[in-house]
Length: 468
Image (cartoon, rainbow, N blue to C red; front, side, top):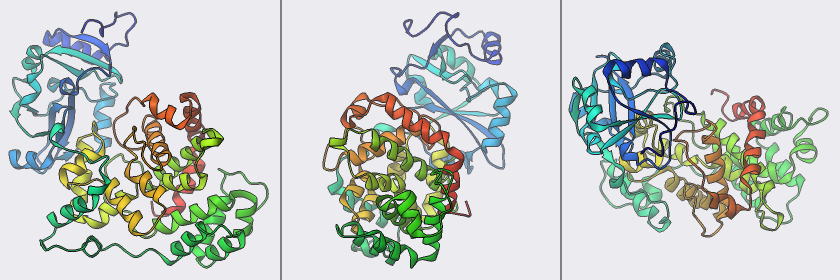
């Protein structure tokens, strides 16, 4: 691994407290920048959990998902991730940015997955973002003398994600629903899942979307029949994000002078659907608020769509709507599986190295993308929208309407790498930019523009869910 180890004078150094600790322990190590080529089985994931008994440091390879149910069986304790504020205070005390997998650093007991020691060498967070410590496994064993070993992680190789088999969605969703209900009888999916009907306002808007003769008067009339929706559209147009000259006095004014027919019809549809399923009371710690992430994603997609060459540019309003609703399956999961949604949240907190897809597949047998896309089709929404939700995590998707899921995939990835949204940072494949005809520079520029308007965008997000 010597090609990864850089000279001390050119490599960012670990925090002083870590260097002193390693010297005190007499551990030989190499410093290296975080290389993408390191196998996940050799990367040590450290998570600090706690309950009424106290804290517990848990170590496992990033090739595994930490299963809290198995931990409960092993320890007899209901452990969850420590509150971010408490972890932050502990890290700040030692001037650390991330939690290193070094048991002697904390006074907490330690539990590790024994399969962690199968690799010849291990890579541990140094406490400085992007800087890893490489230790031989034999050296690492020396600091585990007081730790307990067990098998509690679920290998990711055992979790089979359904990213590209939409024909299996109905059967898999039905199976997942039946597994979490007392009823084992065969029922139609629509009867098993108690989904609210599509709101009347949304039904009217969908009809206007497909009507080539629809006018500003038509959409104005629909929006004005819903006072809350009308107020939000006017407030949206008057927000600092659009910086419209003069005062916005009516829905028609908002459409004609600021937002335009296309944006309003999709914005109104997103607002109407958003009110169909309420936000869950529970959510993962440190999660980006649902509507805030939705607005950010839609705004980035708006910029990315403009950057696509005109000849291959998709319908702008529909791409915006795809961004607004990209995570709608999250609300559906919370609605369909309420007792188990909290378990999903707790597992997301202790598996920050994984996307939610692995956790949902492991616990439920389906993902939010599958059930979200199914609902879009059940509600007779545009097929482009169902594809956008269903294939948004498949960077190589090239099937029907591929530009829509490709845009969502790129937008979500760009924002995640800037700290917006859950999941690990990742290098975005050049093929995704190439397929959309967008340069990496133009894409980053679109994200920067959105983040520069952060305050205004948060105000817009608050209109969707005032209580948040």
